[in-house]
Image (cartoon, rainbow, N blue to C red):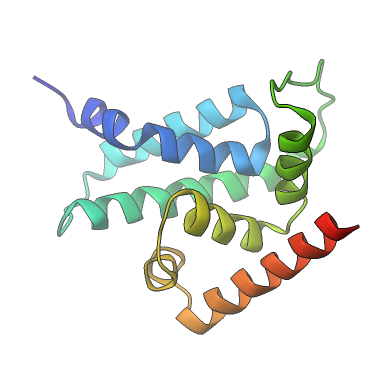
Length: 151
């Protein structure tokens, strides 16, 4: 029989890890952020209307933890020992780097819409923003990416 954490990990670990990794660009840090998210899930024991509500809550929590981690004093004042090795070809690496160069609000919208398949309405609910705001962010992100790729 599965515990709550095992069920959550089985269902959502991939998407949650990708979101955390998108913020910190480091596997170990993303795993720590994922662990913190699961810990908060277990401590709070929130009640959800359905699976979509549960998933949205977890995404909101991991975004908040990721943002706090990236802004932390500790993270800003460490020197990484080595860069993480990424096994992407040159074109994929350029796409990844370009997306990572987006401001957080644009990067998360691109990730949730194009990689995770959320609609603008769903993203607005997850991020607690207006749909028009999400649409604007998505358009600005696409414009920025187009400009970078054309250069």
